[in-house]
Image (cartoon, rainbow, N blue to C red; front, side):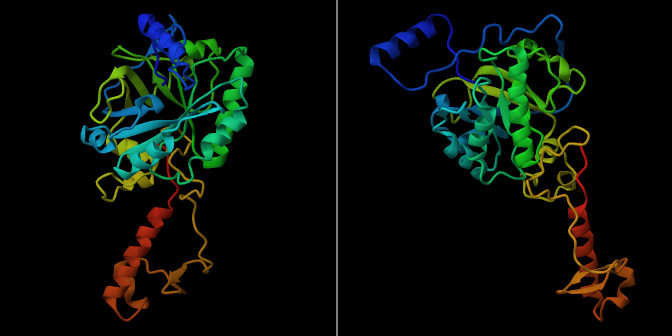
Length: 340
């Protein structure tokens, strides 16, 4: 997720910073062996359609989001902060603009296990005032133990996941690599996987997700995309089609049509609901009418069983048919959303 420098590039960056007495946040190197898979790790290939996306941070500077969309990028995930003390100054702009150009958006937070996990989650949540259907579940970027043992570090990640799930009623996503998750002793947390593994044809999967597989895959950290010129960009894929991604986030189709699958979409995992908003749009609504009646034109009226039985609903057959169709549509909206 973070921009990283290696070898002479890192040395040059450090020298330039020292000479200029810079105080701004610099690129954080990925952990050593971050991209190397443990010998025990399994790889996961797929024949499903793979949807292209990117993730960005302050290091990508100003992004031309219309150009990104026109290049065929469907989703983008923006960094909100590095822990508590380093908010990403480009996040609010990216968050608004990704949605404004018609792309599916997401948020990630670089997680510092040694810092207060609740404060980190709250910082992120404070920037998501308009979060709702159509947005990806938030991502916790797990790359380091931050000096802790595996047990306390895992407990901190779990606290963040619990806070976000409780606040937004979605199943969060964990970004990590097979190597890093091994350092955490491979805990089986209740979250979807965004796996990082570059320059390979099939990503190595952390053990707890060996059965369910990956939901997102960061397959390159050195990509180029129109609309981004500051430096190489991270390239990502969604493990599925556009219709499946829309269902995953509970969104209407990007072409503006009606997508019944989105109404039934879930988190891609039995019993989860990644696309739901805090209001739980799938819950039935109590009309206050007796059984067999519904509010029609402001009053409780008998529910017609079909357009052919409309004589009891009013003198106008056309009006009755319209009411029956509207009722059927409302029942579809109220139906509990099922997992993918």
